[in-house]
Length: 227
Ligand SMILES: [Zn+2]
Image (cartoon, rainbow, N blue to C red; front, side, top):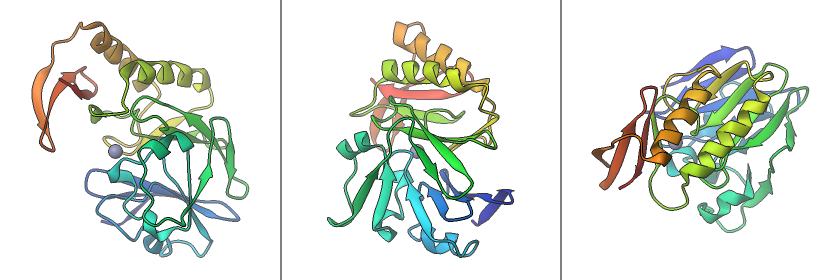
């Protein structure tokens, strides 16, 4: 496990089935998520940059917040606070709302909310390069839609709305599955999720972390839903 270069100022870290990203601007570096097995993402980022390092969480499922305790301040969509447990009470949440821009110095990152997988799932669009760091909603692996706070109808609406930005999105960098993926994956995920919503696909029983779930194979990804 180590950093993999995407371009001069962008790296990904493969953390056993989940990945997180490091982006450098002129003023700050930004971690997008903080790992699952790894609990020292900030320290690892320090191997690549001397800039002050900030953290943004695409959402707060356990596989994305492994090193959150390294940060006094964490940026996230406040809708995630229904799920997030601060590692210590004085940690500050810097709210990032849909449409907000995080600027790390010459590198604006636009927040695009994608509720559905979790209430506050939020992608960041690297405006100048067209890279979209999507978190979990857009990927070709297993998309978790079982358990509390997940909603496939909201998911579909979010992806449809994301397509309004399709001219600006050149490549998508998800936290699971193939990386990068093309924007053409999005309409396929919408189509698959709509078939699930309408009951047009038969699920296979599947067990995930001791939960009995329904697995819906839509060809380009598998949605895991409550049974
Ligand atoms: Zn995940």
